[in-house]
Image 1 (spheres, rainbow, N blue to C red):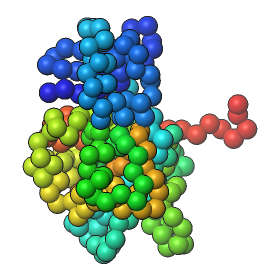
Image 2 (cartoon, one colour):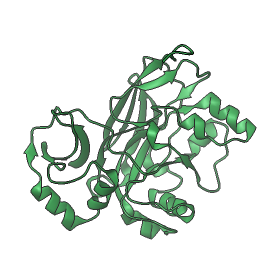
Image 3 (cartoon, rainbow, N blue to C red):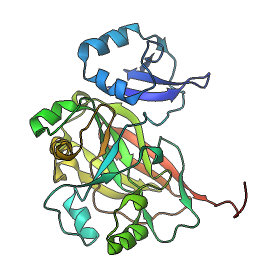
Length: 287
């Protein structure tokens, strides 16, 4: 199994690491910039990728702390892409793709805390997801063109301020703020190329809270495949290397509270964990 991870060197600098058969290559030392768009494009260029690996020094990096696996140019997400999840919230199965934005600034990495603001009222739900990485530009593509533009997959958690989302829907407002509080988008732990994964239909996605499985479904249950998702989004919005797409969450969402440990698992993609903490607002007039 091979994987691309972003980690912190002992000197404090971030770098890309290539994990292969228990050993690590420092791709940053070989010239790969700390830039997700560059890494994504290289993953789809076999000759350039092989040259990069050949130039990268081997390092003892198993204990280097994992970081958020890059900052995307755009982070988009698909809503109601599992029929059972749409139904559990009283929504119809959508006849066309429902998608929205996760702002890059809210994304966090493995082990980072998810803060729940003390001023936020109502429930907050985690949503376990698989996330894809775009490696080639797509502009009004069809699914056959979109499929080979997928550079890699990782895990994600689309945290949602559910009560706020419901209130905004009643007003006819978009979902933007309920999906984009600080820390409401963990991603990681590593990028895995499609060729290094089982067939997507054979992968089971699980979302856990405090060790209890709350969400579980095979990716075969996705209403729209990753290639279909990319093709539809690219009709409206060009996609470029370094963009991310959260592919949707299964049924089983339920509220969380400070002190919970969130986890997302999927076959071949590892495990993403994030603790939930309470964020206390500073007194008014401070600072």
